[in-house]
Image (cartoon, rainbow, N blue to C red; front, side):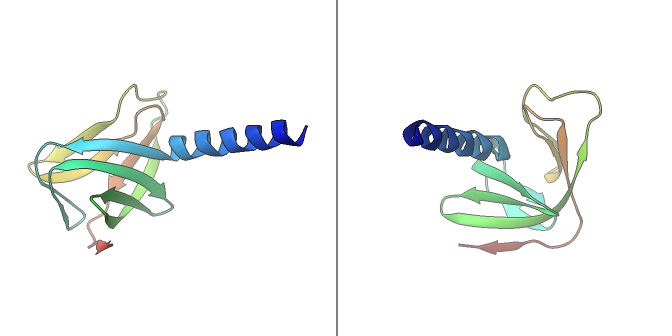
Length: 109
């Protein structure tokens, strides 16, 4: 019985982690809230009033807000930009939109 409970808890944690993390691909370099992001694949995690983008061993924490669409879930992750400035991300599989603020973000390892 303990093995079944352990397996169920492990599966629940894996599903929760997958739901809170999204992979996105930037085809060109972009700026989000003052942070320059190279073209490439990023793992996105929403954390309160910021998002963290991780790629190639680097982590970028960027100020952002989230809002619910009110119109159902997005079928796929979509990026909205103005030129090379990333304005928002519609997170696929959810009804969440990430809106980037205009303050400077921090980069780390």
